[in-house]
Length: 208
Picture 1 (cartoon, one colour):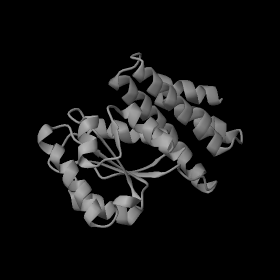
Picture 2 (cartoon, helix red, strand yellow; picture 1 turned 180 degrees about the horizontal axis):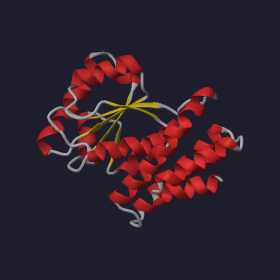
Picture 3 (cartoon, one colour; picture 1 turned 30 degrees about the horizontal axis):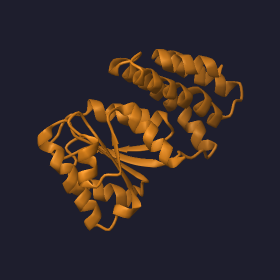
């Protein structure tokens, strides 16, 4: 039964994933076990396939959407069982940048890894990141930029978080096509992720 959920996610079969979750719940399986052994394990497999070149962005998106369909079915049962996410993360594309495909994929991969994701969308001003940290108290903040012209906004956002006295409370993860590890270090970010798979795996490694 868990294998059906796992395979449905890996194959990007949303209907199959939902059906698998319904069957597993009806059989009395623990919601946390369904999440971990079915969906999170499958998304980890998808990430590995991406990293070795077997999967590309379209396959990752389809798999992530299948996972999200199953998670929507499972979420009420997780809440009822009082199963907590492994950590919270606020994500957004920085101010001046309207690109969202990469950010959305990162958000889905993080959700598939067991995180609670607060997605601020695109064109997110520094003060909006600050307010989201105050309201949600996340462990992580993820910022995306696809344009070289909006990369400096990452630095300004980190400066705003620091000025608000919140910098020590969050681990900041940055990524996007023009972003590099060197740039991440220069602006004072904690983590750089070249792709969605590494974003989820690196954040999860810090949670332990």
